[in-house]
Image 1 (cartoon, helix red, strand yellow):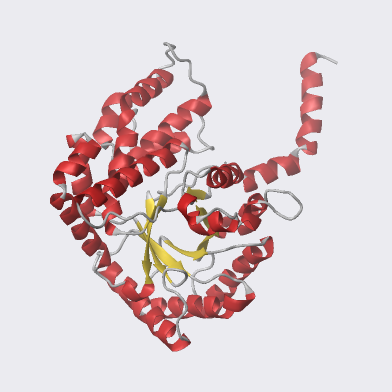
Image 2: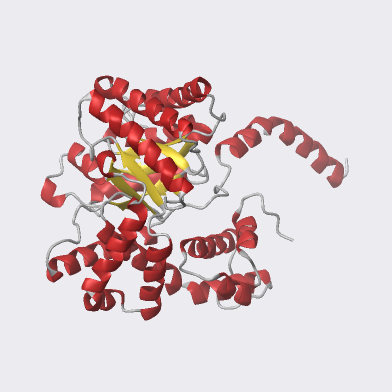
Length: 414
């Protein structure tokens, strides 16, 4: 038998033996999603939501910058970034908005929540029609534990029915499922989404949800396994993201209030497990929030801005490209930290990707996986508004669509 005949025989045997593994890998780890990931999610209690909330948040954020312009300029220390932040707040101040019927809303009488559900759904549809809503949105329902399960499902079905009646759509829309404690709850949510779609005659597969990782049980299962990894795959194509819940998770771990933080070691451990569980699946990761808000006198605002700016940058450096914001005053530092992050390494990233595409070897010999990571970095920068398409085109000759095709796992190098 010649070497070529032997190789062919071995390959045929391996193709048969690994067929199921190949199919499972493609299904379970499809790579990055083809859509844009928002840089944040803004949570608003349902009773405070209205159709013009997004532009009103932008106006409030700009007014806060104007009131403390010197402090903001000192913090950011980059006139170009400040200009980009102001333009973003005027154009698209909120990227993702979650109308909250859980902790931020509290326990209300059923008739009161029912009324807020219908009113919020109508307001969301009106905002979409007037082009004043965020590009991404959704609601957070109560958890699926026995005590709140009925209220959670009632809110979900009522909101979607009212949204459909108001001619609203599910484009860019998701349900946030909080306080998940078992794989069964995730599987139940998948089932519930299908049942709701059938009952309301909504497009099949259009209803997506996110898991809020805010209980130790969702990170470490009773058998010692990383339960969140099983949750990711149980959610399938309906699961859009994993959102970390800073304060519920910290409290559940016994951390006292004074030390609850995005950067506590317990929080970092949970987020590292989440990151490994979601890698390659297309499920987005979102960091949690800080409850220190930029309100009060100039010193209080500046201190809160400095903390938020630092924490956003910290999350970005650790591969968490989305986070929660709770107040319009956090929008300036969200965008300032995000824009600075993508612009800080823009020059080297462009140079390295250009060298890779030209098959040139300089001081750094990048491999294909690193080149894809560079392209992903540039693409996220473009989508956030931190980077201009002309900058990328001039340096590497690629458009945003080209960058996506490069980062996608099915991209074939020439």
